[in-house]
Amino acid sequence: MRVVGLDLSTRSCGIARTDGRLVTVKPRAGAKDPARRLHEIASGVMAHVHPRTDVVWIEDYNPGGIQGLTMAKLGEVGGVVKLRLFERGIRYELLNLQTLKAFGAGRGGASKDEMVEACRAAGGCPANDDEADAFWLRRYGLEHR
Image (cartoon, rainbow, N blue to C red; front, side, top):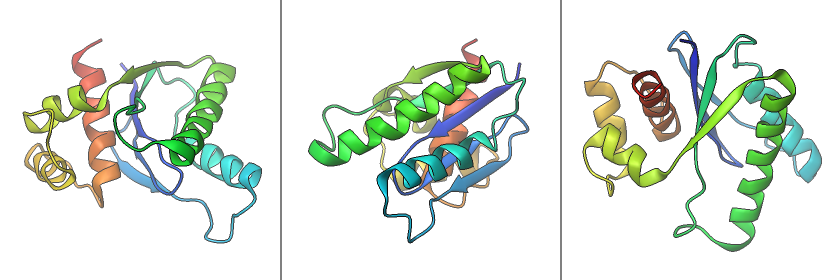
């Protein structure tokens, strides 16, 4: 099964590709126009999603966490990426943060550093916590078909 893990953000998106490679996508530093920034993020993410991907696992929004304008911007990123997946006929699933952390690091309240350490212990080589989360999203998808 071809599974991708996506940890979406307005600043840095972690991706675990179908081949298991971990990558980070960031918009250009000067991409201040909201539409251009969304385009750059979504295009960068989709460049790493194989056309014959079976399912993409995405970290769901955390309604108990960051609020207000930041959550609205994250919702825009998620919406654009989900639309692009739909247009390609690629199914996606959402996984809440606590379940992801419990799966990856053994407890729902694990820190970013704990998720990175657990990823490395499982054989991943994340450059940052976004890639570690993407690693665990992909692994979850592979184990929970």
